[in-house]
Image (cartoon, rainbow, N blue to C red; front, side, top):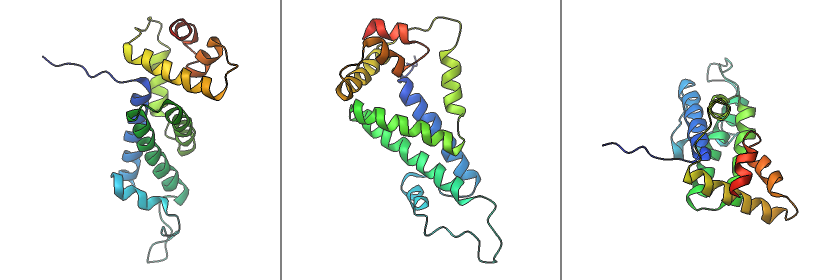
Length: 166
């Protein structure tokens, strides 16, 4: 009997972005593993041309943006494991910005497609815990927010459902 592992929407998004970033770096022939990808963030070591003087077939900006996205996925995963909702939320927002900058939006689009189904989505215990953690972090930043405003910031498409459980 196989048990399905329950993951939060944030973790699914992180894993999707990480998979895309690793695929892009592998396609470009660059390291996509955890310690090796950090070398790509050092922009001074990456030459614009190879030894023969020809320009590289990929842009430096594309590689750096993808490496930053990959690094950010590891940061978000760390904050999720540490149960630090405030840092996880801030890192998740940075992750979304980096994904848009790098042009890797498949994971975001798949989460969007899952959240806009006409079928009513089941509310899971992991979702409740995540919503409450994020709500606590948002209240800590700005105590004047109402439950509805907090729910809209968590998920603009399901805010009425989230508001009920906060």
